[in-house]
Image 1: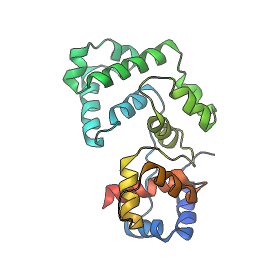
Image 2: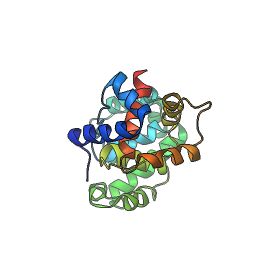
Image 3: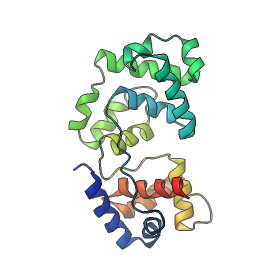
Image 4: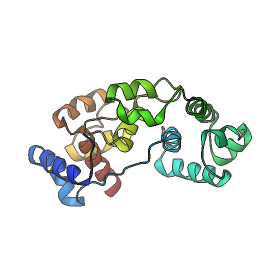
Length: 203
């Protein structure tokens, strides 16, 4: 199953009926957006840029990159040297990760098109073969691009912050605590994540 707007609303209602804290988020801010993203190399590259920085910072770097190329493809990224990538805002590490991703997609060793036909765990395995793509990036791709219904992005600081606020916890939960907390939201953990992100971005 893949999420769409109709399923997102019905799943949000199901979660709200069992979790009054999530219901409170929906009461205050409405249903969360689907936030779908396009499949392919540009989105994977943008997710690498979003690792451990603010969304605004990643977006600024991505926009400068788009301005520096005619079209964002593996080939156009590989044509930029280290200095060009540094000017648009890539760190040395993310330049390396971006190039490794571009080489994998360009050579066909990562077939991005085929990911939609794989189960969740196989998608994780295929994406994490690429240096620079860890669990968080793979899971956000599953959640936002492939629209899988029951994915929980490990290591997401915004989710931890939102969970602390929504649940009234005395401290921000560790990732292990957050993973345990999310178990109650199966089989709609992707929807619970959207509700918490909606709180985080709307408060």
